Length: 497
Image (tube, rainbow, N blue to C red; front, side):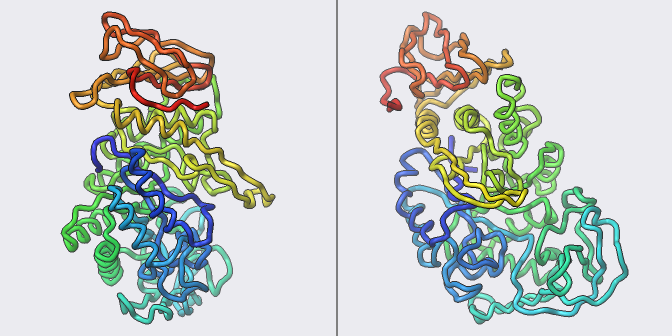
């Protein structure tokens, strides 16, 4: 997965500036992020999408155009040019960071020409039910990539490379399944069958499609030197494809490649089934844990913190869970909006950064903050300001690196106050104690590894140190609706003014 106590950062959010500056920002900040304890960066899609220089990247058009060709109204992508992307990858890796590239294999958008194809309309709310007879439609399914003119790949995409589209001659939202095609059975069962999501749905069972995607993977790894992939929208793609693709590209490049998938479901059984279907070679983001954080933040003191890890991936599959607080899909005004309340975010980050299990991911907008405007689902315009949590996350990263090692003992024995300790190891002595409350200030008696020794709260919430007794016990405290992290005194930590 990563080195011990590794930490991923999602280095973008949905509303990152569309000024082509992100790749330069990555290169500029790489050394500082590595020094803080970040070990890998998940970067947004680096290739040309349907809206050119304004597209977040998930409206995928041309996987081979990394901001090099004049297509979709621009040469660069939202984040910069090909040269800037390659420079960012190298700068990050030179600083000791691993690069995770975002791979969108579910769909293509922005075709260059229409084609006639026989298709059957299906009910969008139940894709097992046809709602009409087969007929010839005009569909935007021919991708010629004229700006690239055959560079890196000569394949043009036609309707036969897809299973379905959601339009007929550019109008309507009914899903049209192409003749002699079937929706995959190894996908999420929402809406009867959730193979189709948007755009031109890739037929990953088609031999030409599989060969082209494997070719792209080999080319992309050799061109960029990335270390791993984040797979988008895996609930909509036949699960076994990801296993096969990862094995093929690893074999072709001679590099073992880590992968994490986005399967947005709160049902733990569904996530475990995907893990099993991919022979445990693809980790998943822990969407159920995010959901628990969202509910806990919204519920305040009514939430029972003892159950914060119930029915989560990190509880069920700790070695394959990438834990997260928020991401670009859950942030305000997005389709899956379910933001964790700001007051609870420090507690949530302590729960993913200072515990033994899971591979934590820090969200760019949580760390740096964000300001943006967009329309909500009600059509009204909203101005959003997300406060940065950089100070607290930095403290947790430092504590993770220096003290969050060894045996873990949980004290999940009160509904509004929980805690745990880490014992440390031979290289990282002293351990730590964490205590948090979603109600009033609280105290929890816990045992740490140093006896008759002072410990201090690196969050700065409680300025006075505490001294353990002859057996290493102390009454570790936290203030109302806060988290305190107690580490051996004498370590150098900044305290917020």
